[in-house]
Image (tube, rainbow, N blue to C red; front, side, top):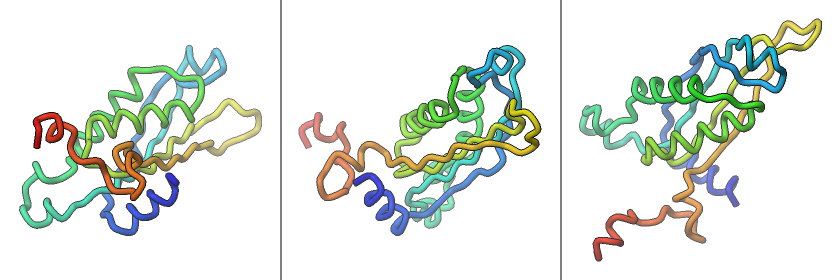
Length: 153
């Protein structure tokens, strides 16, 4: 079901992307990775409705990619994970929490110099996630604003 909802969102949404966010952090299973750290690279593809910003030309109506970049960088450098899968899963949850207008995400994190003998490439994990508010109803439409419901509207 999640994939069907994502495909529907992707067909009917706009996309804001940030490629090549590089950071130094201490993620990894091996002791030297969590002690010495290493370089990572992250790509964020956020799916949302950009029409309000397109009509108003107001930053308040847009997904501010400078704010998104700062939030993502702060989050990934202030935590430690053994697995890249856990890193991007937690990051997706955080982005949905900080930017509720984002309907879906594709995140890709790359370990630029993994500790693999005789290997000079990178490894990566890419995930696709749908904002949980889209998964609450059977028809795939987002739930109404919970604040409006609790206010009796």
